[in-house]
Length: 310
Image 1 (cartoon, rainbow, N blue to C red):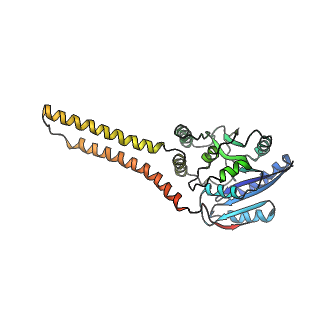
Image 2: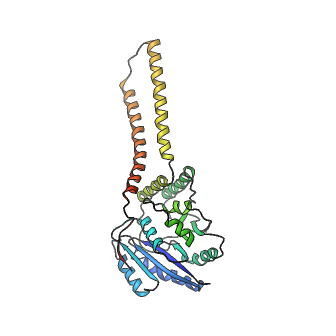
């Protein structure tokens, strides 16, 4: 029985990768003769010739290759959501255009899904070869932290590269939140998932737009989106500070009654004031982060604005 596979490909300044990506994926058709491919490339406000490359690709195969171009850069999460909204296939796969997600896994992923036992076939890197050690360290730390403080389990090394059934896609699209963290959403909706491991691959062309600072901000967004533990930390920190201050006041009163009021040095007083003020600002920052996310949600702005679509 034939089926349709929608391939979602977010792109940001990937003019060098697009001409390499399409023919590599097309090679897998030989192993999937009963599957019709549908491509959705999402141009996320690129500043290079990415849009022109997508136009050329669409002209080459207008029946199967489609693209959406945003009015500006809205982020990868917006690109993913846009692609999922437009996918019409029985199965949907999300891939990076830089070929770090190996197309040769597509036949196996489709076979496993078509057997009906799983709803999603995900992928995870077996190693982080070629990645800076400091980035690998913080990546492992992030996964340990979020899995400890969140009810949603996110597999260490899991990629956005995954193939899902139409039922799972509909469930993901039902999650309408503005502040999206796809790895968390994929896990939160449930459904039975199997992970395939593969060795880490380098980009075939171009340079990544994900700096260490971008990844750090993305990880903080993920923690805020799927855990309220930071708010609990702020609350308990304030409580313990209050209890500690109360005990200190009682001790000062007792000491003054029993031993008089010796002259205290101002450096220790300044240190205490700075310490308590730092705790207050830290807790205020945590609360502010959540309030900022609420502020973005209640404005109900669109996740993206389309400038061109074919």
